[in-house]
View (tube, rainbow, N blue to C red):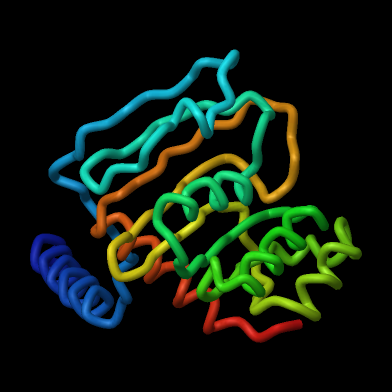
Length: 204
């Protein structure tokens, strides 16, 4: 008896299509964001000028691209931005933290110059920076997860700022790259990702 291979292959293909369709229905699509329009941008890369001075005034209709040359870290940049926005909420993710940066954040919270603060830390902070981690654990709202992203979200009634950078919350003499976004769509995208990650993990 000869097998009709064409019919067999046709049935296999039909089953495969149905299975793929079923899988697509049950698969959770990843969070994606496509920015169709870009705001005007400023570019800062003068190593002879302190970058916070070179950045100048933050504008709600302009993104700022910058390179730093070891003269400030992520927390110092946040402090600079807060001077312009006024009291605001801050949500930060960082791979490492210094004791000095933590003290600066606590001081701002006490003075009400920072309305609230949350931080996502990499799991390794507990072992590579035990003293800063202990300060965070006893004083700040935090979660630990597996993260290498360095992002700072700053917002109040007037501002929605998202800083995406290679900088940690530690002093580092190396060249670092970052972007200060003033686009609310970018802010909402980052906020959802970090918010979901923060609240799905328990403090450990």
